[in-house]
Length: 150
Image 1 (cartoon, rainbow, N blue to C red):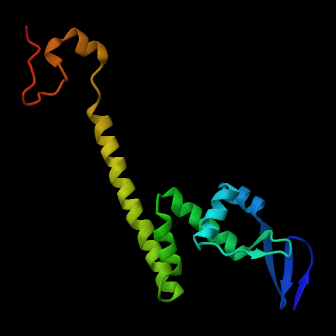
Image 2: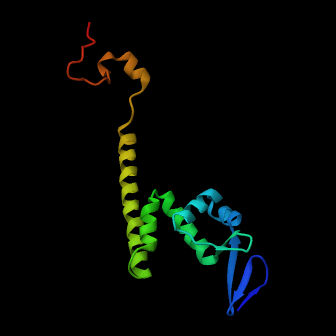
């Protein structure tokens, strides 16, 4: 039995389930309604529909959307997210795979950050130094290149 208390709250079999529309979910997750519709088209989200066809998301779907947005911010491809969410095995197995994917991404990002730090620590030559000191020429020696020495 479903008892509708308001547009935002329903009671089903004694348990309250928060519901929200696509605009509110967009505000909560920080992504556009278009992105949420794309995730739906890819099978990542499955909102309920009102009689008028409007999308209604439960609290669980809002949590799922937040997780999808977080994974996308980590550059996890939508296909990988879909595989992790809809793959075979128990939910615990899929969550473990999801955790592993996030950890792998974190390792990759840490590696990139270390590369940037090493580059910055090495310093960049100042333009004034290279103009005043011709021996600090930073051009590359390429095979077959003509020397600039006159």
